[in-house]
Image (cartoon, rainbow, N blue to C red):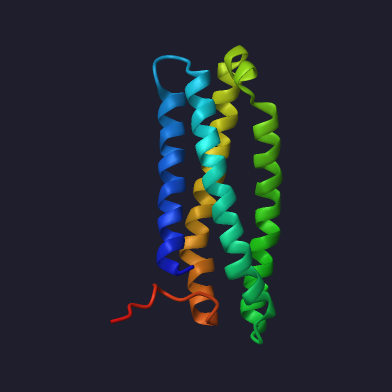
Length: 145
């Protein structure tokens, strides 16, 4: 896994967040469409988080440089709150409940989208740069000739 690939994953996450935003801002209430997007987003997040955990957090925590370990620890702690919020959100907002309370779903989704977007930005701006500096993450795949 490389910086370049993690950024591509972030682009896909942003794409799903944008799709979700479009659905909740649309003229009609689309509980099924929202649920399908949440499934796509959940799968993308599951894969992305597995990559980050094994390829960034663990190597940075075990690095011999305390500043990098602290950065990784801080991000991991902050993310645990977001992970709990996301899991609770998914449990609370099933298709039937979305259909029954579109306004509530819309309000909760706006908050969740804001949290996810802020996290992606923070990782792009801070975490990945630190991972590159710590040597825990290569910039791109090696090209062999």
